[in-house]
Image (cartoon, rainbow, N blue to C red; front, side, top):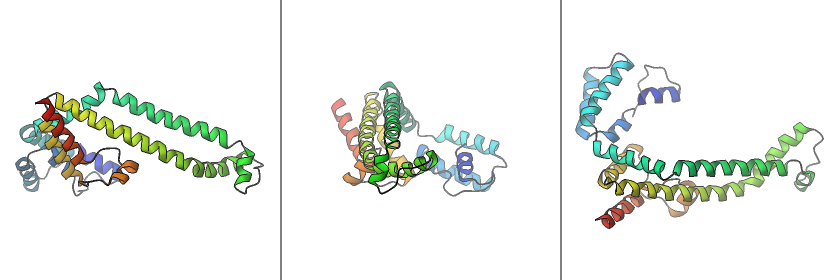
Length: 220
């Protein structure tokens, strides 16, 4: 259903052909398998989405990289077993609570408006509109700090989930799966440390591969 999802999200018609719609499949299939599937589609174009799904399912059944898929599923199960979903939900909820509490404290204060050169708002609508603009400027540094904290936590739990998969004996499949996903996503191999601190919720591929190799060596 991946091509259907891409068309729906991009607002294209059902029969519009998009470039790169099989990149995801290439990340979970052998190279020979993806080549044969694409060749089959060229010689036997599917007449509808149902036939497309059946053909893709048949090729996945025969040519899927089972070790890599199993390892990635093991990684995701690690998030569940280690309660990472609850942790990230709690962090997001606390972040939203901080924003709403700050907004409710700042907007009713007339001295905030006068400090920025505005007269005290005479109407609730004016207070809300101008207050929202001022609040956005005031909260920005706080949100940046919170974002750095959340990124640090999410990067740490990605390493934990990788180690969980390694402990299940899926380290090799996870490493090759990460490489395949990296190729499919065309992401950068190396992230600048400062850039990653502020913008990256996941560790770089090379960092994760090094951590997986280290965990596998300890396990041996």
